[in-house]
Image (tube, rainbow, N blue to C red; front, side, top):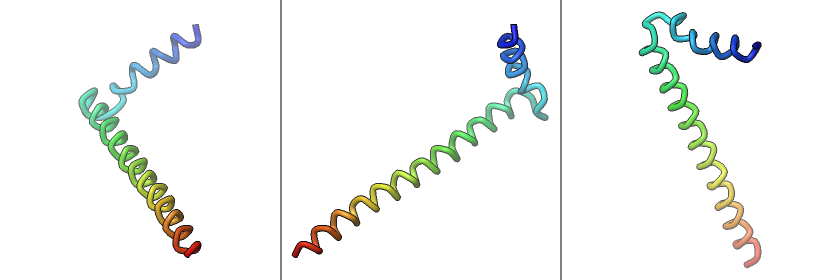
Length: 62
Protein backbone atom coordinates (compact mmCIF):
# COMPACT_ATOMS: atom_id res chain seq x y z
CA UNK A 1 0.00 0.00 0.00
CA UNK A 2 2.78 2.40 0.92
CA UNK A 3 4.64 1.85 -2.36
CA UNK A 4 1.50 2.65 -4.37
CA UNK A 5 1.19 6.00 -2.61
CA UNK A 6 4.87 6.70 -3.27
CA UNK A 7 4.51 5.90 -6.98
CA UNK A 8 1.41 8.08 -7.19
CA UNK A 9 3.31 10.96 -5.59
CA UNK A 10 6.14 10.57 -8.11
CA UNK A 11 3.67 10.50 -11.00
CA UNK A 12 2.20 13.82 -9.84
CA UNK A 13 5.55 15.66 -9.67
CA UNK A 14 5.19 17.32 -13.11
CA UNK A 15 1.96 18.98 -12.01
CA UNK A 16 3.84 20.90 -9.28
CA UNK A 17 6.35 22.43 -11.71
CA UNK A 18 5.33 25.66 -13.48
CA UNK A 19 4.99 24.87 -17.16
CA UNK A 20 3.72 21.37 -16.57
CA UNK A 21 5.02 18.10 -17.88
CA UNK A 22 7.05 19.52 -20.77
CA UNK A 23 9.25 21.67 -18.53
CA UNK A 24 9.62 18.74 -16.12
CA UNK A 25 11.12 16.57 -18.87
CA UNK A 26 13.31 19.48 -20.02
CA UNK A 27 14.59 19.73 -16.45
CA UNK A 28 15.32 15.98 -16.36
CA UNK A 29 17.07 16.26 -19.74
CA UNK A 30 19.25 19.10 -18.46
CA UNK A 31 20.07 17.18 -15.30
CA UNK A 32 21.12 14.10 -17.31
CA UNK A 33 23.22 16.28 -19.61
CA UNK A 34 25.06 17.87 -16.69
CA UNK A 35 25.62 14.52 -14.96
CA UNK A 36 26.86 12.99 -18.22
CA UNK A 37 29.26 15.89 -18.74
CA UNK A 38 30.64 15.52 -15.22
CA UNK A 39 31.10 11.76 -15.68
CA UNK A 40 32.93 12.39 -18.99
CA UNK A 41 35.24 14.92 -17.31
CA UNK A 42 35.96 12.48 -14.49
CA UNK A 43 36.74 9.68 -16.95
CA UNK A 44 39.13 11.93 -18.90
CA UNK A 45 40.87 12.87 -15.64
CA UNK A 46 41.25 9.21 -14.63
CA UNK A 47 42.61 8.20 -18.06
CA UNK A 48 45.05 11.13 -18.15
CA UNK A 49 46.34 10.28 -14.67
CA UNK A 50 46.82 6.66 -15.75
CA UNK A 51 48.72 7.71 -18.91
CA UNK A 52 50.91 10.15 -16.98
CA UNK A 53 51.64 7.47 -14.39
CA UNK A 54 52.67 4.99 -17.10
CA UNK A 55 54.90 7.57 -18.80
CA UNK A 56 56.51 8.56 -15.50
CA UNK A 57 57.20 4.91 -14.67
CA UNK A 58 58.74 4.38 -18.10
CA UNK A 59 61.09 7.37 -17.78
CA UNK A 60 62.05 6.46 -14.21
CA UNK A 61 63.40 3.11 -15.40
CA UNK A 62 65.69 4.66 -18.04
